[in-house]
Image (cartoon, rainbow, N blue to C red; front, side, top):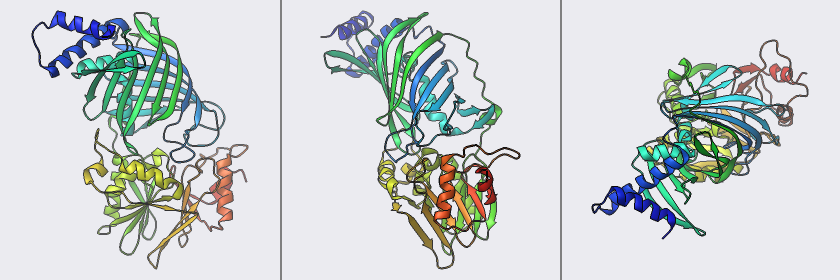
Amino acid sequence: MSNLKNGVRVLVAATFTAFVLPAMAQQYEAAGILKRTATHIGANEVNTLIYSAAGNAWAFGQPYSAGKALPKQNYRITRSIDFVNGALSDDVGRSRAEPRGGTGVPLTGEQNITEAVGGNASWNVVNKNIVANNRWVAERVALISMNPQGIIKAAMKNNATLTWTTEGKKSLGVVSFSEAGRYNAKAYINEAFEVERIEAVVPNAVLGDFPMVTKFSEYREFGSIKFPARIEETQAGQLTLQLVVTNVQPNGKVAITVPPAAAGFKENVASTKLAEGVWFLAGGSHNSVAIEMKDHVVVVEGPLNDSRSGAVIEETKKLIPGKPIRLLLNTHVHFDHSGGVATFAAEGATIVTHQSNKAFFDRALAAKRTVSPDALAKSKKKAIVRGVAAKFVHTDGDRSVEMHHLKDNIHGDGLMLVYLRKEKLLFQADVLTPLAAGAKPAVPAHPGLVNFADNVERLKLSVDRIVGSHGGVVPFAELNRALGR
């Protein structure tokens, strides 16, 4: 029997001398290994933790091709955690290591952003502007515990159980527990009473229950605690982080205050009539469009999560009562634009997307959603996904709705435009962000924007107004202004 098992069982025997049932024995053994580990790495003495690290990140949910490699970034982070109040703040500097794929990171230069959670509120700070949204809460709450000290604290609080596993010649204690509605986790503890890795299952709006694995190595003493010098993370089997830790401050000053915009966050859907039977659904960071047909409704874009897309569905039903939503037109696979696809599937809508995205959505929408069941899980419906090629036309004999492939765009290879020929309205996602009043266009123009203009010309689309997934509705002349023409 390994030294780890012996050490834990000696500790347990010294504390519990009476016979206990196997389930109780598991908890007692878990308590023993957690106590030894907490003492070894200093988890009990830490109320706050600040650490800085640098390396690379891969933007999860933002691939150039659905289900394929994630775009690589140069990445540095200072993470501040308040274990007592359940809050976290990441100060991040990131820049692109490759041009293709999503994220809001510009092609050149570094983007600085703060990503935070406190209680049931989550928010970002970009250029001193607060962007509040509840869609980040579950993952960021989980991140509070996805470090050696945090996972030990969480396991001790949640009546963890213990099993054993052997990997190579090593015996590892596996401590398992759940944070109800937040995540399920396993911490793998080695014979040095160090956390080697954490395996967690966290809810995701697109993927349902998805696995996060965080590995730790090269433990060093940082003040009163031991902390790994290297951290590696995968999400849903894809590499997302490789970091070298440069500084750790146990019990440093951490003051995370939830801004009013985040504390009072509520979904707001502001509807504007664009044409007869066509409504622009804005009011947040991501926009949708509702289109009335003779006996049904078509919605363009199901963004973010159940909360946002649920609010879009509710507003659509108010604007167009008595007609079912039959189609949801998805512009592309990036998770901020497809986080509500499951919500529309629960509504009974067929998801229409580029054919390169279909296999990915088929898998994602069939996945289990048990950690925090969403609308699709509760509906028990089977999602229907239709993949289309370069052009798709849906008509009721009077109105036609077209989808066109945005060919060769660096943002994504399955990117689609939605066009209303009669109304001369063009809906686009992530390729045109209207300039602020008086702002000068970038020189040279962003290649994704140039490609958008080239595709509009190639497709011979007659456009009066451009509707954005971000921003608002602008005249076609705004495209030429953004290009500096």
